Each structure stands twice: as C-alpha cells, then as structure tokens.
Image (cartoon, rainbow, N blue to C red; front, side, top):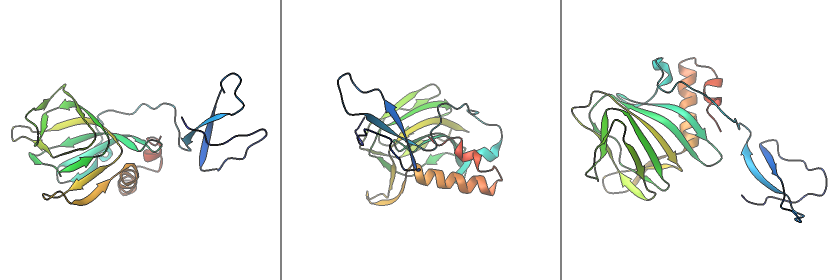
Length: 192
C-alpha cells in the first residue's frame, strides 16, 4: 500500500483511476488509498478450456494462448498456452516470477533437466532466461501460466529482440477479437 494524498474535504479524483478508501489507523489523521484500474472487476468465471476455437489467440503456427485475466494494476496476465507441435518456443527472460500448471501433455525448459508433465506445478524465479521445449511425443500441450511483469524475447546471443507485457497482450487479444467478431466485451471481461 502507498500514500497518494491527504484530504480534509471532498476530493476530485482523475476519471482514469478509481480509489478505494481504507479505514485509517486509530489516531491517524491521514487516509490511505489503493489505486485500482477503472476496469476493476471483483470476480469472473470464464470457460477454462473453451471448445470455441475462436477464443484461442494465435501466437505462431500451431501455438495459441487463451487469455483468462489481464492484470493492468500489477502488470501481468494469466492465460492458457496450447501447442500442437514439437519444438522450441522463443527463448525469453522473466524479470518477475512465473507460475505454471500443466493441464495436458508435457514440456520442459531447455536449460533444465526436469520435464513438466500433466499435473506438474512449475515456478520460474525472476531473472531466469529459458526456452520452452515441447517433445516429439507430445500431440497437444496445454498449460496454465501466470506471468508477472513482462517477458523479454532473446536471440541466441542473449540480445533482446522483442518483448511482451500486459498491454501488448491486451492489444493482440483486441485485434484477434475484432478479426473474429467476438465483440468489445470479450477483452473487457478479462481486464483487472
């Protein structure tokens, strides 16, 4: 929590941000506020693995993601990753942690000696660079990912070639929704 201001009377807040007033500590004269997105939604229930293929956003040939939540306040996202081919996905760096849960199939990071199989939970600590590999024996892989911060794509020499954050994911999903006629609420329902 952080302090954004004091008030002894009515306050006008920017329209782009809503504020939640927290009860001040006893004897305190200041009020504490938490910044929230204007899109703040308390809860949502979405189809985890949708049958409608239009709800999967293409990343590359035979690679899709299905967005579940875009966290614009903390800068992260939750999505399912579906891969229907073997091979290595782009090498990338995470400045913040990532959690994953394998729903179907298996995968590994090229830089590690473990294999994440159905039911595996994976924690990737901040500061790690790795490349996700799907083996030849895997017909389809689906994994739930919670990405905090951003993902920075690297070439083989470790040089940045691209990046992805919650805002680029939202734009890509909005473009996908427009193309497939899913309507503006398709993306809005996932923004926090």
